[in-house]
Length: 364
Image 1 (cartoon, helix red, strand yellow):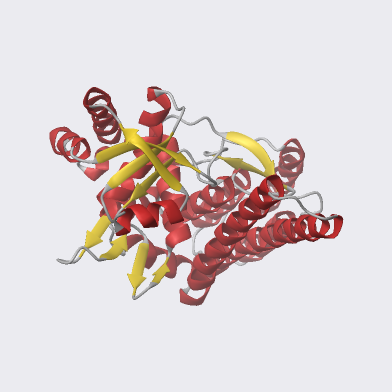
Image 2 (spheres, rainbow, N blue to C red):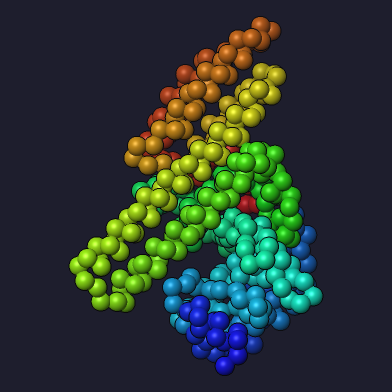
C-alpha cells in the first residue's frame, strides 16, 4: 500500500473506482463553461480550463464524515462520495476544481499557497477564510438558492445553506464592504490583494482576529461532527453520552458567541473608521444607506441587539456631523426617524436578499 493510499484511508477516504472518461469530459465541460460564464472579470479561457480539469484524476469513494467531494492536492485527484448523480457531481466539482486552480507549489510539489490560505512549515493560515470564499464562489456559480437558515441559535441569510453557511455569511459581509471582485480574484489566483483590502478596511489587528475566528468556527463545527459520529457508532454509558452531548452544546454556544463577536468586529471596525472622513451631505447620506443596507446580511439571535443599537448611535453621530454643516438643506433627522422605523419592522420580519449589493449583483 502506497503512502498516498494510507493517508487517504487515514482521512476516511476509501476508493471504490475511477469515474469513466465520458463523465469526466462532461464534468470538465461544465466546470469550464460555468467558471468562464459566471466570472468574466477573471478572464478565464474555456479551452485551457477544460484541458486542465480533464487531466485531473477523478474517483468515486466511500468518504466517512466528509462532504460530497474532496480534492487531494498530493496526487491532484478529486474524490466524490458514492451514490451521487452526475449532476450533483458536476456542481460539487466547481468547489474542488477551484482548489486545484488555487494551488501554488514549489518544484518539489510542496504546497505553499491555496487561494487565501498560506502555508508556513506545517501550519496553515487563512484556511477557513479560503474555504468560505471558495464556497461562496461555488454557490454563486452553481446557482445555489439563497435562504434564511438557523444554526446554533443564529438566524442568518446565506448563499450556501448546506455547506459552511455561517462562514459564507461572514465572508459575504466582508466582500460587501471590501469588494467581491477583489475577493474572487485573490481566491482564484492566490494573491494578497483581498487580504490587504481587509487590513485597510478593518485594521491589521482586527483582520487577524477575524481570520482567527473563522478558524475557530470551522474547528468547532468539525468537532461537533466528530462527536456526533462517535455517538452514532459507539455504545456509550449514560455518563459518556451526557458528556458528549454537553460537549456538543458547549461547541454550539461557542460558535454563536464567536460568530456574533466576529460580525460585530466587521461592522464596527469598518463603519467607525469611516465616520470621521465624512465631509459632504452626499457622503453622509451614502454612509447611512450603506450601513442600513448591511442589515440584509447580518445573523441574529433571540436576544441580539448590537446592530439596532449601533445603527441608532451612528444616526445620532451623523446628525451631529450634519448640524455642523450650516450650508446643507437636507434634514437628516427626518431621514433617521423614517429609516429607523422601517428598520425595526424589517428586522422583525427577517427579510433577506434585497441588500444594496450593487457590486455583487454585477455577477448575477
